[in-house]
Length: 414
Ligand code: AMP
Ligand code: MG
Image (cartoon, rainbow, N blue to C red; front, side):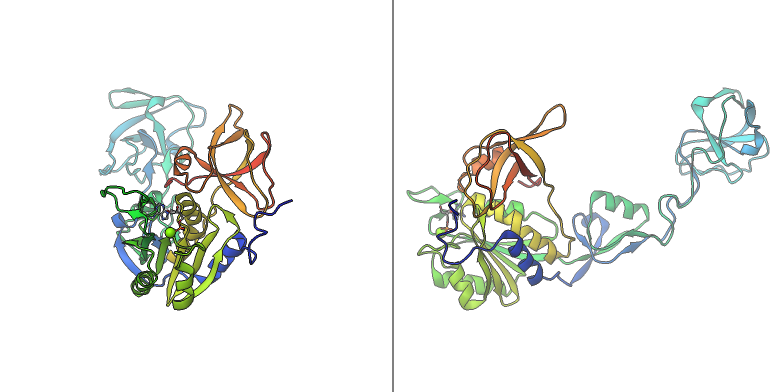
């Protein structure tokens, strides 16, 4: 069997080992800030939040109906109650309910102290001020108890957690106006390459538009990150070095694309060696083999490959978990499951591959995946048309139609 990596001067690092090395090398930022709840979506909660109140705060009705005391009825017998008043949501009944009385009540309204049951309005007949009921009722039926959702003092949300819309709702239900979250991670990005042309400029022969920076700004669109776009740096060693050193003083992470390979104009690894530390720079994955990870001073550095598909794959598989860990968010394992591959896939053993696939599900809920077409690391169009990676392990030597494969649906951002 031909190993696609047999020509490599030194063995490539397996992705599991690369991720382990990253896990050891990065530590969550320690700074925090207080934010109003409205600005906290997607931020990482820095301390647990406890409920200052019971939720619900009052005993209230779960239905529109009539609140009464169950001692006013006998099991199995129809009963009659007289109407004493109304309890509206937000405007409780002010009087005293006497024996044999009931109160008209609406969902969310406070249940009068003397009542222990609410009967649905659909189950009664009304004549003037008299309510007739012929169905059996239970004590506490249709009543939401004080603290049945959250008890006063209970932990509402444990940290660390990236706050979701539901979390904001839960915090608001406890009256919490502000939360303490981890500070944003400062990230600088730039593209390298003499061929790169800014959007809005005419494209000269031999040049290409810079698609990586546009893509990275989308991939980094996360409330936990504050991103500085440093534009395009040409393939000039001194300029690149100066830019990296300058950026490393101001941010927690630098992400570059291009120039990470072994070509004449690929200076990234060399510079990282001379002005920082290289942790690794070649991984046994495809696309995305040349990926430099290291540090310049206290700043983490990711030198991604130049080809756009390799940028997305390495970002998602390697950089994103590192950024999450740095921002203090809990680790996140992307969903992977098995599907039947409906097309043959070419692959040589040696590297773990992330091929682009089109996922479908039949009426029996079985998953199928087909190749999204050309798999070159420059073919961004096939990525846009696909919905998942087909993850082929390093030892895989190709796939026949009908074989089972592992798929990983793309996150919403791509
Ligand atoms: P490099 O790693 O610099 O050798 O680049 C590998 C390939 O990716 C080359 O074909 C580059 O032209 C292309 N490339 C590099 N940077 C970008 C970019 N920012 N946008 C689109 N393509 C790029
Ligand atoms: Mg280049």
